[in-house]
Each structure stands twice: as C-alpha cells, then as structure tokens.
Amino acid sequence: MASLRSASVGLPVFFFALMLFHAFATSSVQAQVEGPAPPPSSDGTTLDLGIAYVLMFAALAVTYLVHPIDSLPFKLF
Image 1: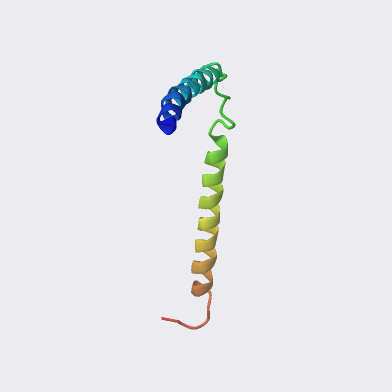
Image 2 (image 1 turned 60 degrees about the horizontal axis):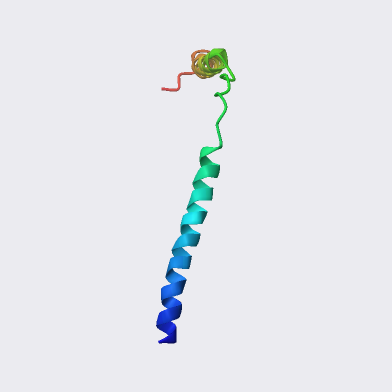
C-alpha cells in the first residue's frame, strides 16, 4: 500500500515540475528576438570575376594544347 501512495503523490509532482519547466523554457525561447538579416557580403561581381577567370584559363589551356600540335615538324595523326 505504501508504494501505491508514493506513486500517487509522485506522479502529480512530476507533472507539476514538467509544466513548470515547460513554462520557463517556452518563455525564454520566445523572448529571444532575432535581429535583421545582414547585408549580402558581395554584390555578384566576385562571382562574375571568378567565372571570367575560369573561362580565361580554359581558353589559355585550349590554346596551348592546340597550337603546339600545329607547329610540330611531323604529323602525329
């Protein structure tokens, strides 16, 4: 009988503690207000410049790969 009495007292205390924790946890989460979003770190010119450099290096690589074949004194293929 003693275990039944301690269980009947412990359960409401547990639920009361759970509701108290929930009340404080949700109020602290709702109190945090986010500031405005930061401005973009670049206006797109950095991305455009990166794409331009990649295309220039690709054109340079193709140029150096194609022209030495034309300048060889013998025919490869």
